[in-house]
Length: 410
Ligand code: ADP
View (tube, rainbow, N blue to C red):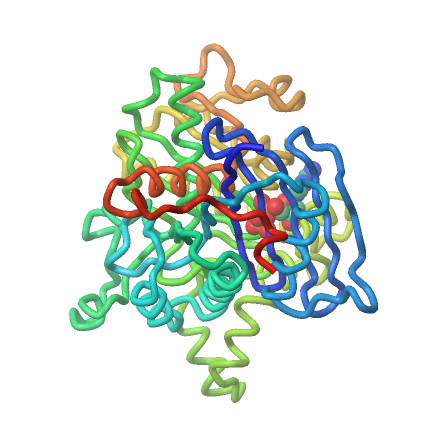
């Protein structure tokens, strides 16, 4: 088997991974362990989507943390893909701060620098870094490449980068960073492939998953994002509220006695669709429910997206195409239909039939604005960036790296 790139996306309670051929970028395997520390469950598929294994990790196989998850993943790779030679590991890292506007090979200095950013993303960055540490230990000498969710947005104009707070806070990094950058980058590339005429246009991409955000692009570059300093701002999400008046937080502190920890828990885990519906954070559950609160939560989600479409169109000075991606954007025809309904005033005319059938182009022939559904692939984006870093003369050439099989690593 030729040389392979392993990608790792370490979330708060999950570890997603994929393996790509370093030359062809074909996917060899993809999978995840979720429920880390509580009910770990492991699924792994080959590049064609056939299941290689599905396992509740119970008893002796229980997995408590990312290092344990990576050990389990590597043992499975060794068993199912014994010839795989991992030549580099690419990591999704949520925050690159002010400095990183491109992927970087991680050495000890970079690791320290990324650890300094933990206060900016306390619920994500530590898991990303523990994934890197675990992979370094598992593959000694194999390059680890950090790919940042913030990097795609680093060229925002000042007005979309700042909060109207005292300047010193802006200078020390209290800014609107924006996230989901790897997804936007992949989708932008894909849009150029399937609709090259739109390459230089004014585009809005809606990444609608458990985490949700929107990005305004001009000439393929991000100019604004609904997400800001943290992954809390903008659209309501599975368990996060999105845009909120900061006065609410002062009220919770002053009159409800909530401290930072309690507020953080409320904002990251108990709000959004889950909090508003009182039923579920999963859009499928809400769409299937007849409870009026489920409907209200979905209406709030849709209304927020529609409002941001208006705002982003103003930022862009018009609109040429809109793209849906993410678990909800790719799969929920109902949400797409509701978001784009009665938008003829903006030049968007949805093709109901195409939308129902899950077509790639869901706007009608006469629509002034094209609407697309594009399946995102953050893993492939990480693998591409990692391969590019491998090819950079200064980073890795002449290091004598030959790659390691997972079995060699233990
Ligand atoms: P993340 O990567 O942020 O964890 P995903 O992009 O995988 O999230 O999206 C997960 C969400 O997608 C789930 O909360 C679920 O509500 C939604 N989803 C997946 N499939 C469907 C579907 N067929 N209809 C509606 N929503 C769906």
